Image (tube, rainbow, N blue to C red; front, top):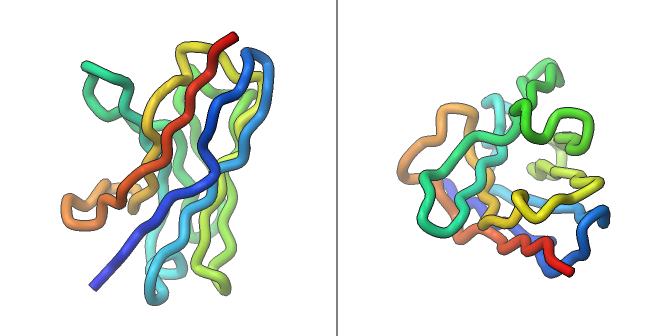
Length: 115
């Protein structure tokens, strides 16, 4: 049974940086493309970035050039480096497979960008 746990969120000023991490049970990351998602209050969850098994990376236009996704299959972790953060980045961030499997959603980690 897969368990995903996100960490690294917090309060940061506009223009600041945060690094989010996701740990998974088993060998999930080595067998799947992985992704980060986020959900702001009152809004639907949206896709942020993906990384394939071959380390091909794709980003939403809203974060392109500011966020970097990476993975370490041996440690079963995926990371999201977030630079030049903006208030509109405020949301709960989640990791999952690129397909966003319903039963894999973890607790998420809160990111708040504010002065």
